[in-house]
Amino acid sequence: MDLLAEYRRATMYFETGDPSGAARLLEPIVEAEPDNASVRQLLARAYFQSAQLARAEEHLRTLVQRDPSDHYAHHVLGRTLERVGRPEEALRHLRIAAAMYAENDDYRIALERVETRVGGRR
Image (tube, rainbow, N blue to C red; front, side, top):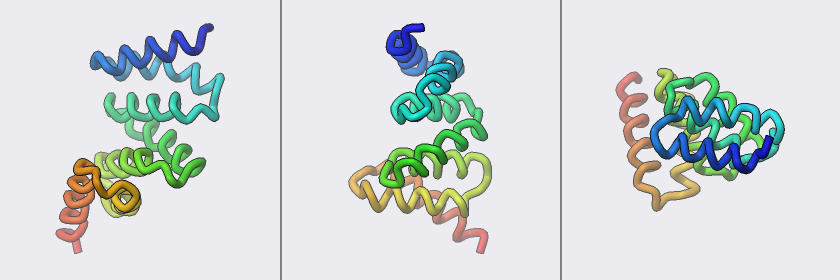
């Protein structure tokens, strides 16, 4: 299998709105290259976009564990936890992402949304 060609094909599937198709192509690539953060991140995003949230969480936690400075992985992990109804857990990762990349409006908006939600529960 030509891993690069399959990765490019998976990227095309993802970008054209078929995250499930992208995930199917990316899974064997992650198996073959488990330390490739770019492939794992795209797979996590494909899982997130196709509402396979437990799978997304698993890969995002791996990314955050391997590189705690990966603000994007923290952000998507926070969004994933938010979507599965665990806003208190999401808050930690969203705060980290927003602190590392304060200029990103999407990070700030997600953080404010979850802070409001968690604040409303107290």
